[in-house]
Image 1 (cartoon, rainbow, N blue to C red):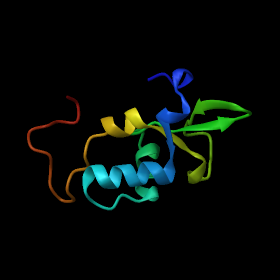
Image 2: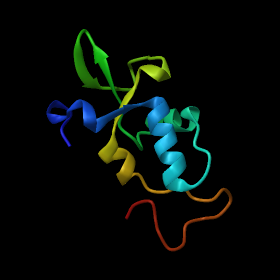
Image 3: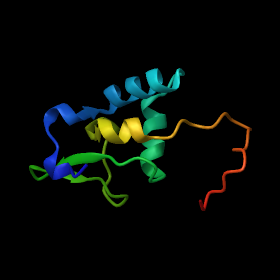
Image 4: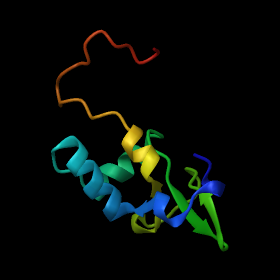
Length: 94
């Protein structure tokens, strides 16, 4: 979804995203874990900058609670792998 077409009902904050992922993955998913996904470019995050909603880029430093997330991106996120278990037959390049 294009952020310029998003409506308020399509967005949530860091706490809401953390709760949604905790329910989806049936395990505790902290706000810090969420921000790690953003830093690793596995999840898009958005923020207001000078009154405009923009996608966060690595060169923009924010407090984590200032970030917004699209529900569609949260539902599309792959479940995390169990620690210490390699994924079966799936290469990172595929």
